[in-house]
Amino acid sequence: MDIEQLWKNTQEELRVVLAPAVYQTFVVKTQLVSLVNLDATIACSNAYLCDLNQKRYYQLFKSALDNQTKNNNTLHFVVQEIIKNDDSQNPSLTPLFSYQPKTSSLNHSQAGLHPKYTLDNLIVGNSNNFAYAAAQGVVKNPGLSYNPFFLWGGVGVGKTHLMQAIGHELLKNNPDLKIKYFPAETFGNELINSLKTKSINQFKNKYRQLDCILVDDVQFLAGKEYIQEEFFHTFNALHLAGKQIILTSDRKPGDIKDLEDRLVSRFMGGLTVDIQPPDLEMRSAIIQQKAQEKGVDLTFEAVQFLADNIQSNTRDIEGKVQEIAVMSLAQGHKLVDIDFVSAYFSSQNGSFSPSFASTSPKLNSRHLLSVCAKYFNVKTGDLCGSSRKKDLVTARHITAYLLLNEIKIPLKEVGDLLGGRDHTSIMHARDKVASELATSPQLKELINRIKNSL
Image (cartoon, rainbow, N blue to C red):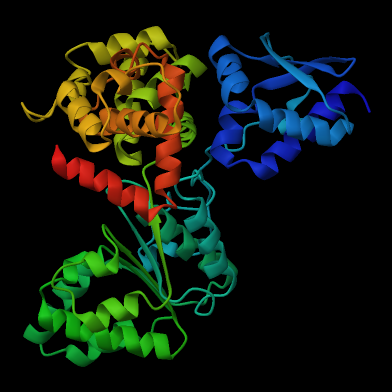
């Protein structure tokens, strides 16, 4: 096997085991340039990628290459230009996504579905991987696999996108399905209007004869007794008939105040999945995709700068990329580098710097360090010191996560506060905590307790 085919096979193995966002960001722009006496040299397109692959993904690369060669190899990552012979014949080096609006003969607009919210342009990463897998199960067996399918999470994490993407896929598989997307508030408004116009029977028939309902923001049903009553009966009618029900909310069913117990019970009777804010790799992939949509090319360093500093949600990411696109195109810059991005966001027009500032006079970095040190029963000096004791490392990781997400200060500043650590160590700490939050209720409760103490 020649070296090019060997690396192609290695990348394909990595594609299978990694989240698409991670693969797109860290594997595509690599190439095996030599393998001599079990010593492999892997080229990366820039120093930042080289450093991150060496520190964070070494074992993944090694395992995949070892599996292909049946040997125990040593890896070296170097900065070197990636030479692509023919991308069309080398799928391992081509992007995983390329935004191309698709046309369809299906009238999805009647179902209330936005043409942009499809599975084709949904970025999948650690924060939504489980929800994405469950969505595929819904598409394959509507009304059977997960019914109801309840998605919850904060603002802008992609709940509506994934829900509507399921609707698009169901219609592709069966154009005759009667599907309807609507916000819960719309359901309530139409119910009230039907009472005024004495057309309640038409209202009931409109919703109870559907094959699938996609209901957004069901938390708006809270406290509205009659609307909850009608939604309960609509839910039961559809569920008993084996029709698919998909719901979203900004919180899990049991946390929605003034929601009737019988509705909470129905909502939790299927599969309930939370979607977390995107991690670093996923944010990087989202930024690349949104830039492509806007007709702007971002250098890898510019993408990483944005991914490091926009840590809230997909909606905020899209807004910032939109601002950059408008400014760069206006100035005739189709290729946007890190100098352009950092200069833009440091200017007053970028309105980026204020997001790093604390929203409360009390809530500042020193106060947060003090609270975390007290909570973990350690000295602030130890928290910011060099000790690698397990308890201190855990406390330090959580402190870094909170500094980035609650105070919203830059990676470098967090590193300086925690003993002069480099930004890659802080990124690792943040992403490790974010990843564990998706599966550990205990960690989520712990962090919430610290937040309440701030």
